[in-house]
Image (cartoon, rainbow, N blue to C red; front, side, top):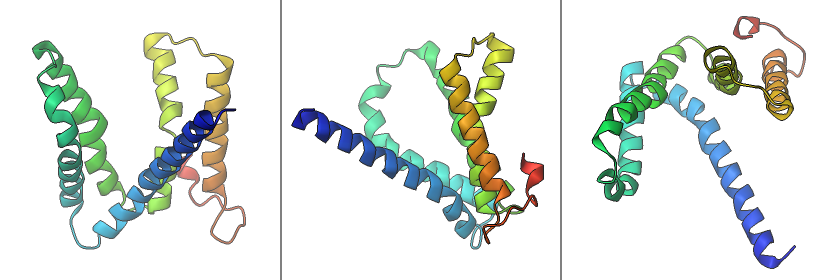
Length: 158
């Protein structure tokens, strides 16, 4: 391996760990926010902060988007980002942030299921293996309690 490849690989791993930290900590931060704000306010804060952070990157690219694409982008934004911001905050008023994070980790499984049913997706072995490993991990996290013993008090989540 060349020095450049090692630097690229190291950078890729650092970005992956940073993303995992940011993504994982969001559920804890939602729970902390719910101590002060309502679930609606937490959802609005998540959307506004994301907007403020991403807008500088989007400004120069917005003019390149064709008008017919705007509706698709709006729908994707509302369903993919808007609704979850409010729904996760509302859900975390009654469940632990750890359960919310684990349930969110099941997203790839449901994405594959929708792809198979709605779009006749052909599942390759490595797709199946990845989703299966993720599902086993999620079930394992749900099954192990804080004491390290098996506990199925969150079995409703499975």
